[in-house]
Each structure stands twice: as structure tokens, then as C-alpha cells.
Amino acid sequence: MSRRRWWRRLLGHRLGGIGAVLAGLLLVAAIGAPVLARDDPLGMRMTEALAPPSASHWFGTDQFGRDEWARVLYGARLSLTVGLLSMLLATAVGIPLGAVAGYLGGPADAVTMRVMDAVLAFPAILLAIGLVAALGPGTGSGIVAIGIVYIPVLARVTRGAVLARRGDEYVDAARAVGASDWGILRRHILPNSSAPVLVQVTVGFASAVVIEAGLSFLGAGTPPPTPSWGSMLNEARQFMVVAPHVAVVPGAAISLAVLGINLLGDGMRDVLDPRLSA
Image 1 (cartoon, rainbow, N blue to C red):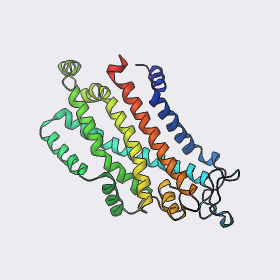
Image 2: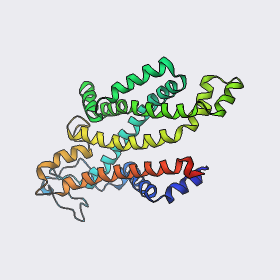
Image 3: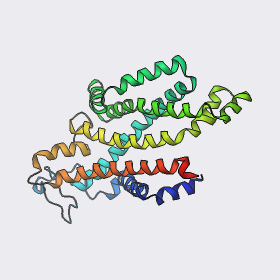
Image 4: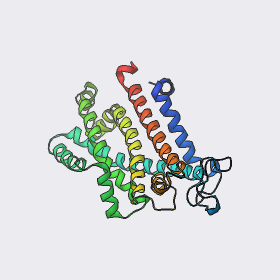
């Protein structure tokens, strides 16, 4: 399927198209935050604390008079950065581990998968909290923790895809003409196993946004005053009655971002399904 046709099918997919629009808005907000923000996200004006949404402050202000619109935009930048870098880490480690385990089988497969199972035995958020506690709070620690959490997920998905492809005829043909195991895996098996892995990376990206927000909410993620959707929700708890917008705005941002990325992943799954692409 050509790239143009792939995009046309994705945008034509009802849910996938909605997800692509929402994910695109997240990307625009993250990249364009310095231009789109109408105020300094760290600038405090105590005389305007907890001001409701208005022409001056589209999303209102928080307890320190900081503009919520600007903070949500910069929070999108943080969420996108954490999601992207953590998935790059998980992909760089998880895909090779799963591919080698699935292709070689035997002891290599057994040992690798048992280690992955041991990591998967821990709930994702609890494992992330434990890793951040060991590494120390901060954005970098959160990226490493989330990446480690999703290494076994991508490893298992990649292993399953490789197992389904390693017995195909084109693999036997490549082996018959003298291709090396590495060449077969890199040139033939992995390109034909990319669809489920790509979908899982997209879903993992959405989960990374949620985990980052959870870590920041608990005080284990990005420290204040850096704008983070999770820390914004934490700070808003005591003002929800008198100024509900301080909780609604970051909560809605998290919900829409995760919804958009998940819908995009669902659309990609349907478009990349060979039974639907034929």
C-alpha cells in the first residue's frame, strides 16, 4: 500500500480520522506553545488568582494567577516529549529483544521471555513509581521509567509477530540463497512484522502520557513550577469547589490527548490489517 493511499484510508476511517485530528492538535500545541501561548506559563499575578475564563485568560488562571491556557500548551509539550522519548527507549530495546527471541527460539527465547514476564508482573504505574524513586524525581527519570515499563510489552508483541513470519516461504527462500540470519531478520521478517508493533507503540504512547501525568500528580514526576498536566491537577484539588476550571482544564487535556492517540491507534490497526487492505 502506498503512503498516500495509507493516509487516505486512515483519514477516511471514522475513528482513526478523529484520532488523527486530536493527535495533530496535540502536536501543534506542543510545537507551537511559544507562539500560541498568550502569556508566560510561569508568570504569577496574585491579584488575578483563580480568575475564571475570560477574554484575557481563555482558560482562566490558577491559584498563583498563572495563565492556564499557556500552562496547558506547555504541558502538552512535556507530555509529547516524555511519550516520544520513552517510546523510543522502549522500541530501541524491546524490538531487538523480541525479534531475536522469536527468531532464534530455544534457550534465548525462554530466558528473554521469562525476564520480560517478571517485569510485566508489576503494575505499570507501581513499577514506574519504584523506578523513579530509585532514580530520583525528574523528567529524565520519568522517561527512563516509562521506557523500561514498556520494553517487555514491545518485546512480546515483536516476538509474536516474528514467530508468525519466520516460517513463511519468502524466509525459506532467503535462507536457501545463503542470506544470513541477521539479513533475513532485518530485510524480510521485521518489515513484514511492523504493523502490530507500530500499533502497540501508538497505544503505549497514550499510556505514557497517563503515567507521566500520574507521576507528576504524585510528586514523583516533573517538579514544579514546570507546567505538567498531572501537577496542575494535584494543585487544583483544593480549589475545585471555588474554581472548578483549574481541574477541568488539565483533566480535559489529558482525556482528549489519550482519546486521540488511542483512536489513532485503532484506526492504524484497521488500516494496516491485511484482511482490510486487500
